[in-house]
Length: 426
Image 1 (spheres, rainbow, N blue to C red):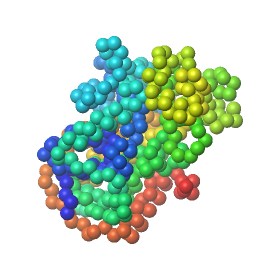
Image 2: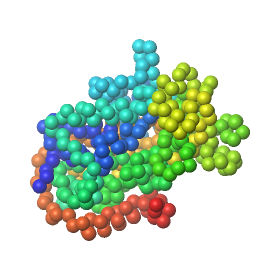
Image 3: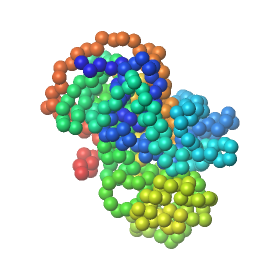
Image 4: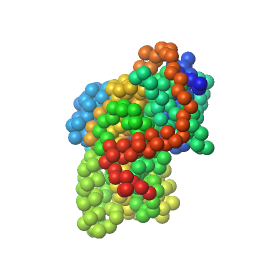
């Protein structure tokens, strides 16, 4: 039997940060479907929210609730905001280099925020954070990493989780046992024809959770980001960060006129863009930065600037065609404030989970913060409660049975989200 104290599925910030907050005497395995860097945390551009000072708690709290249409779990929102300063301190200790302005941090403002409270690392905040976490993880002698392995089932018996079933690139199945399992496999963008997510992020953890009747929540709460780069090609959509609009970029229709407040909550701005596209009879609207964004655009947004140049657009000079694309999942495996699921010894964190913090619509740049806050809480809970348990041996996985179960689990996942199987088929 391959036994571990803690098994973590996913290498975004939620999975990695949890591992770094677990006791060093624990034997840990981190599993990822792709490579270490192939996760949506790595793609995050805009930044990470932080409570600026005590006077910012109520505005931050209200901004989050208003964006979420007041369907948020207020206890989760409070926990996230109150923990934000501690999390930023942790990241700085790990070597994350947030942009500075003079002697202090550089804060930006994004849609539905009442003030600038978003820390950033140019336009590659996720890459900076994830890279530093990966570097530290590789230093941990108690942590093993397994890439290119897909979660296909949970090992469940006696009312608790005993580990998972994995499938490697050759198709071989194996049981991996653990006293505690944390699911952090990211979102569901791979289920959509146009998404800013990696294509392999298809809600695997949520599907197998559904198979075992683990409680889920808000499964139809899918966020569409207002602005991705329009190319007319299939494949992953390139995100045009909300921080562009936060720094002053405008959106215009075919007539060159602004048609909406660029800092509306994401769902409302998306609706306005679709309305304008229909009016213009075009598959996009246009974004314009020149004379609206202060300072050097190429220095503030080097990654986006470089990508646009590859597509034939100069971010600092041209009108850039943009279109909405699926971006984030507010639903997921239901968890409490310690990231515990309804199944004993099973935890979930990040976009895979749902503690209700985002309500019906996520406030910009709360995703990295939420993932870090509640993955750390999961690790702290495992540290405090973990004790040696007898792991139940399972028979070797049968390929036919696993595939049949997985097919049914994925069908149920699509049904819960509200996607027709025929529309999903590619």
